Image 1 (cartoon, rainbow, N blue to C red):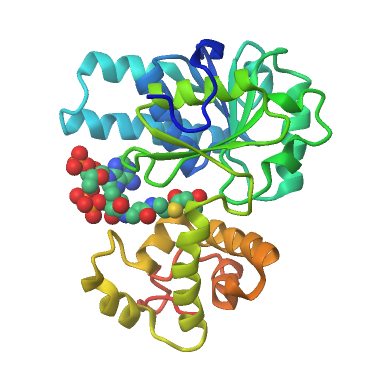
Image 2: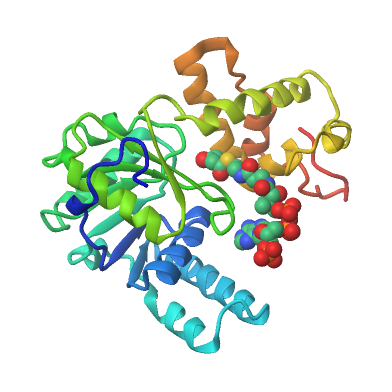
Length: 295
Ligand code: CAA
């Protein structure tokens, strides 16, 4: 059955090569998925060789873990590893037909990446964004081919979360949207079409819960106590563990977007900002004194 809002699948084109911009954690997770499920070359790029190497090494390491758990055959493991390569040059995307960005969550950064990519990629290459909260419409503005831009939003951990939010901007073409849905299906994800509104659907709801916990934390509630108290509530993961997994900078950016769009219903946590300023990844990171870091 065709997902609600998905155009006729006869408009879709097969994806034969994927480009990934930004070789961080989410990018590594979905690069592996593209290589495993689509079985096409995936090129990861970032601003320097060290980041590129780290991204590719992460993917290869995940393949090794699957091999150790006998979830993948030795042949498939070798094939998957060979499909995922890295390059500091975006020229490697010249013959890609699907490029997805997962760079820093800031509109201008993403717009600059797309503008630069348009000079390199082919006429009909799709530009997808894994943004969690920013306007896909704004990202497409000013491009020569805004019709090729689409939101393709994965959830962490990508390997196990079944949902994918597909975001249509006003100028996204039916053909691009059809390819996005077909690609999601090939990746074995349940794709839903969502409106281009701040943080789309899932994060808009999730951040109400996360924001309330962050507010309690800012107002003096001990994080460990809050997580322990919430454990029997049947959540798949307690809020502070989820915050550490998603990453404090990402969570803070999403809450800022939601605060800008909907005001005080969404809390922007001063403590999360302090964690970032102190270079901490999550509140469970152990400080130099051997105690969990609390700002
Ligand atoms: N990468 C790959 N696989 C992972 C993984 C990871 N990071 N974490 C867990 N898994 C796999 C495990 O290997 C295991 O697979 P097998 O059963 O095949 O061995 C499976 O997931 C279940 O893991 P566990 O048994 O260890 O643990 P669990 O039952 O508690 O499940 C979880 C782990 C799926 C992560 C679960 O805790 C969960 O659903 N948490 C909530 C995650 C969530 O809300 N994500 C959305 C975050 S918001 C976001 O991502 C959007 C954004 O833009 C900010």
